[in-house]
Image (cartoon, rainbow, N blue to C red):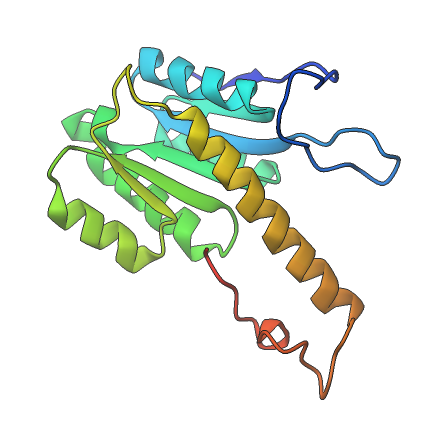
Length: 184
């Protein structure tokens, strides 16, 4: 499976969440990178993202995902380690490390059930969520709604620190001037 892009129509009337508005007041879709070795799971993740008003870029391998992470402004990345074939595990793990090291998107890792070592590894990297054992019955849509709230808060905090509102001695009281950034 190669890169597939999906997007949601501009009308967002059915949403109970208000997407962020751009400068002209138009709805602005956030971008999510979905990386999965399973076409079925990738489409499941992409459809849930679309329903929560995310534009998605779906990649079936780590190399395509790494290129897209550089090419596009990604706010959320979901890497499905559980679906990766044994031969792909190392490249998927390197992708997670690369994405975590970029101080960029919120990062979600889907791992195998009861994979304590995988969860500890993910948490040490600063992964926002580790999801063990995702299946067709999982309500993955909730994740995208929560991610939107977190992304909006991070963007608002970054905007305030750039504009210097309330700044005293070069900080705004939350450490943003020193490069500190909360992952929650």
